Length: 118
Image (cartoon, rainbow, N blue to C red; front, top):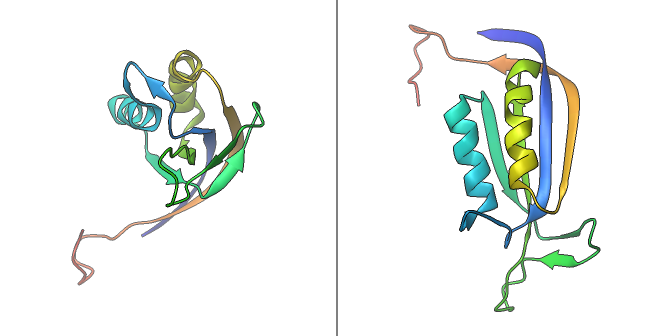
């Protein structure tokens, strides 16, 4: 089954060391997304990057101190994203949030199409 619609995408950029209430920030944001019933959320761990602080963040295997750049990407309706933003305002102390409208094409298996669901 193929479905097309417009949605909103939010991407957050911060560091692996960032925390929220003692928990890694990306895990806290991911848990909040699940709690709010967000449609799609993915956490990416980058190799290297820098942001507003100009502090270079990297994930080199030979360093003891890891602070890789993290990106969390979320896609959902504007209404759902609007519910999430106040939580992000509270949780993110340093970083960047980018939002954009996106055209979405979602593919889903339908019952009886001869393929297993995963």
